[in-house]
Length: 543
Image (cartoon, rainbow, N blue to C red):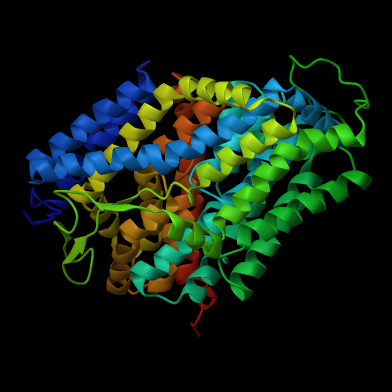
């Protein structure tokens, strides 16, 4: 039975927004202030979301249950599939002893922990974000950091903070492409506008990352490395996004950033070597041969190549043509209508579950693990045993991810997200400041900058026209602000917890990164409001 969303059931935007926020308050409250396990908190948040959607917003019961089931399925595939594949590759390298060699090779390049976090959490993570996105960089970066000797909670937090500035151009520009599709704004202009916002934060984040780990005084000792890492990434992020498009921004910028940092380390080293108190003294050189080091890096090279290949639209389309069954979700597909002013005219929401098991990034990660295991001398039976062990280890986390996505889909199809969005959109001339915070909220709710852009892109555009702000600026701000919400979305926190063996500590991870996320989102707001009123000429097409 068709149902049209209502966004203000209490005839008061603030009240409706507060009621719509109750499931998020329940989820984050249980995670942040109690010792409730993540899967229990997620299930409690889901139950609350269903209750609010049905009782307060009038969503039919079958439709609400179908939305939750669709979200749970999406949480397991492809998101959970990515997590499983990434941890599997890591487990292969640990089991074969190759991670110890890799660890030593990085220490040979930079034994200073501050440089290591720049190379892995920021630059290498950005490369993986550009190729795959959707949780992959957090899983891989966090696993690498903990393998290098970072404390688990710390590794999780640093991987989340590092995975911010590249997110808007992740997965070969998917968030920007989706934003252009839902708003009808020119793709090249959106890419350019985001490329005139995020480079400022690409410079800031490396400094922020090191300061969060070691403190401001220790950060000042390595300011040349922070500057080179961030400024190189920012420069290429600007150039590629403005003069090529959104597709290869992160990949090219990340490669340039890594290369520039490695070159810098040949001519400059920090005055002191910063290590953790628990670190053993490290020899000047590890003694591993070049062949042994190359062998240790091989699984990660294979992973990077396959992740990049799986991200290519032409290759992905070919795999989908081989096998990619699609199912219209019963009681949901084309039965929920979004209404103005979220969209210009009522529009039926699609609900199609695509089981693209061949083209999913997780499949590329699985193949990388199998190939790496064979190359490193493991028998097929042993590889299968390791995969089964990895699956068992992440079982509760997969349940958590499924419940988190079920909650997100319930809020989306129930219209709860738009009700919260209208509270931001009602801020008048201050809207340019709150516009990025709306994107931040969208990513925190959905776990994806792409989903946030689909969710709030039209609302940003319509509100901007009403308050006299360029719609292009507001739409881009949704994506730029959204990247700062990536570190606190439940999906990313669970992924980081799995990668670092911190299942059950998701609340501690959330507390560690929440204020970093909010502060950076507020800085994006200040940048956007200055671009709206002080530097309007920065918007493409303006005079």
